[in-house]
Image (cartoon, rainbow, N blue to C red):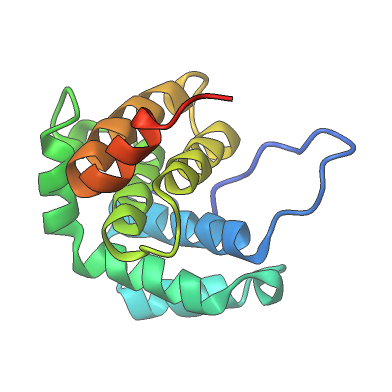
Length: 163
């Protein structure tokens, strides 16, 4: 078991720099990975993540909400996930589990983030850090969770005419 940060796949040339919120999600995912694998104390993980290069470009408030919120609400988040995954959450890869935790947390608590954005950001995290097709799994699970957690928003989006 390693507590080293998860290595990210390189971005293709011509891509713009990630937003502060995306960087916060990436840092939170790395922290959740450490927590899921080793059970390190959240304060230790938090301090370690803040020492990493590039943390200054991240939205620290959103990072705090995601890392500490996901850890504090882990049982409730896993209960939501249990209704939409095909196995126990403990059997998910730590990357997919962490990404799904962030997605559910944002759907539950970050109402300023549209549900489609929360899902898309989780899919992008899974593409960057996860396995080959993990992003498809994340998309499917969070789409179902969004219908449960934000039914009015999801129904309005599905009822709107497509452009």
